[in-house]
Amino acid sequence: MKNKLSLIVILCAILVGFVQDKRPNVLIIGDSISIGYTPFVKLALEDRANVVHNEGNAQHTGTGLEKLDEYLGDTKWDVIHFNWGLWDLCYRHPDSKKVGNRDKIKGTVTYTPEEYRANLETLVIRLQKTGAKLIFATTSYVPEGEAGRFANAEKIYNREALAVMKKYGITVNPLGKISKKVHKKHAAGPGNVHYTKEGSELLSKSVVKYIEKDLIAN
Image (tube, rainbow, N blue to C red; front, side, top):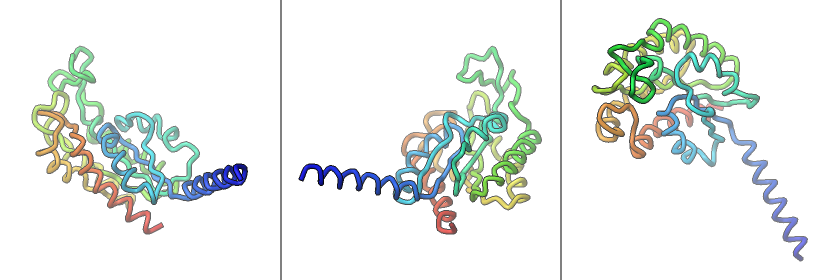
């Protein structure tokens, strides 16, 4: 009897694993903002998709160019939701004592809007080769008082990004606009680009919405 029960348990485990393996694969690429909302996206889609965030922080487009193949790995991705921008528009100086050496007064911008656009275009071309449905999330809100970023600078970078997405027919999740509203009540602190847990959960709703659309299309 015990042997039969053990066999049933093993078979059930195998079947469960088989079902999970059949779920569509979703990759989220992005910085700490995406790291914050990914757990909520995973929870919302746990029965419908295998949601994975790239290992670590995707930082700026330069990091993306260097590590994109590593992020993609050997997995066949059905949907890829991605963003770069918040690090690209950041100014840094080696002598700054702020976290990440942020300094918008004495520092140098990571990538100019024009450089950002060129890098992003290269990344999009590579992402299209995966055959996955692609979703670009516009860069989130930059508030007043941020040490290394000028307030509302994301608007300039988002214009460049939107031109690239239009050129290549990429779906756009307007997370930038949404994040500004969320930030008013759920900022992690004054001058902080990050969000509370509640704020990250609110941002996740738009991410889930756009991923769901592509899962249905598949």
